[in-house]
Image (cartoon, rainbow, N blue to C red; front, side, top):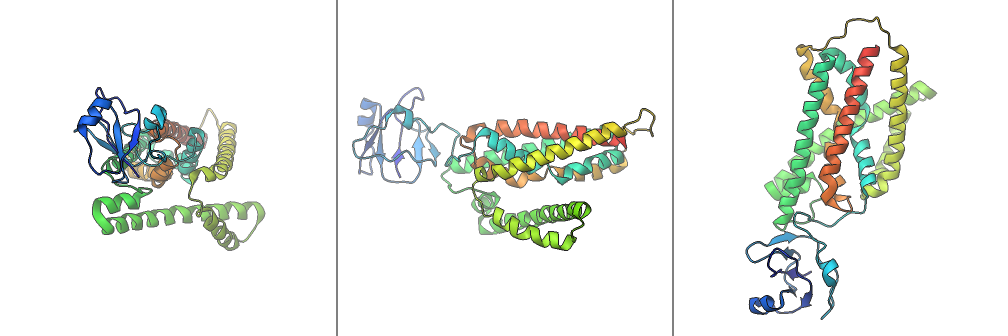
Length: 324
């Protein structure tokens, strides 16, 4: 671990690291050479001009005594990019985001739109999606802020709760996550059992118990990159199912049908609840960001993907309501 201080003017990064066992920093020497010194003091990397330093938890590469690691390696840490990078590409992260947010909740949108009206349902879905996106981006910024102050190892919601509110905060956040994820997981297992029972006539209890060991093995995978093949398979299955439903909507659509209601404010809470349930991937935001090979593009990728998912949900809800 190394402690690096940049002494160059005009916000330029230093070009060389020098190994020095001294715990002091000679500003006179650094001003003459325009470089920083490497001192084994702290597991954090501090970069910047005097008085404008910021932290980066990504330590520089292994530096041997007297070794010049070059400008390219020395400038890999930029302001606002903290933490150890993951291994997932943008496509892999986008696939994982899609499967995290598109699930059984999508199937409830047509009925929710029929209750609230298709215009009010679309507006409510968009509003709830916007609030969720803002909260997710705020969580990402909170994590970066904490890492900029020297906190490391932030891999989930519980870590953020521990740093901000101590052990009680971590326990409370994790308890909320467990309750919410148990609800989602239970709904999915019931959904799987109902469909397989309808197709193959298998006892629902056997299906539910059979899902548990498979899911128990999958949750042992800690790197989101390794889950991308399963996510891709799930995405293909989702898109095939959604395409089949759209085809059935088109086949069932009639010009003369019952009156389509645009607004029904009596059921606005219902459509809001279904919208929240449909956007169920909020608990995966920090792990998804951690999996990125370059975390700086995650906010933009998340925003674009959520906008696309919200549009898909709105179209799916309207088509199902119009057709039936």
